[in-house]
Image (tube, rainbow, N blue to C red; front, side):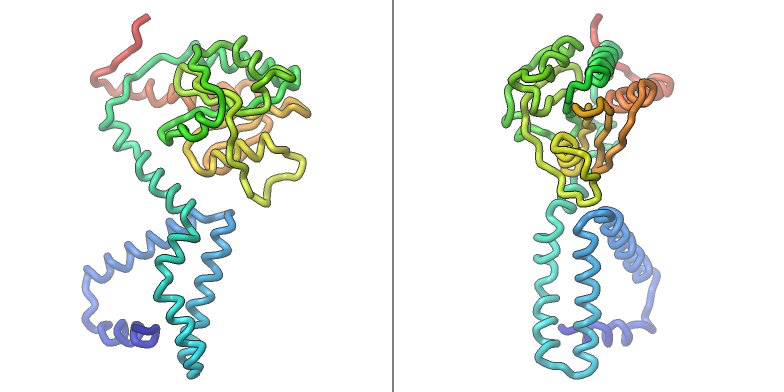
Length: 280
């Protein structure tokens, strides 16, 4: 079926428009809006605009009688679903991960509530010390998106979080100081890990590989990434493809509370229900 036949069918069925048709249209509109929102500020947004222009061009060619060009464009559009899946593979994967990280699934899983105040204090002390002495650092906090492939690219550590260990790993000329550290809850899982680099062209040229790597892993996972600049000691946060710079003591503490869901857990305690705590 070509574009003209599609529009004719829509026109012919216009008089039989029902409430179900309205719901159908609204669902498509929501899906398109979600796709536009998901691809905003990425190269995929430009591709999406190009595809839209391509469809308009196909309809125009068919309307004025350019049969050969119209045939080629229609064949391209017929294969559009496969082309879209290939082009938007990273965005589709990110959307599915967002769906899988829905709070409803988290509530159903019944995750054990722990007290991470000691870990927050240790990480905060280490990051502030490294910032003061301009020691570069790249710390990835794994959330619900698994990072096993990243972990396997570095050295397994599996150690308790302490400020001394964090600072030693990132100390100048230490064997693992150039790679990323992966932290999951109260454990340092690995260090010296390799991260995918972001290809975001809007990233400032003054930011180096460490920031581009932190932003890169945030684009393909739900991880929070703390970055300490080796040049000026500035503390930054990368999350969901966004980079926030110049964190101070207060904002760093708030970020760590967000990472460890301190406020969310406090709210859940106030609401009530069965609560599990770590012994000691």
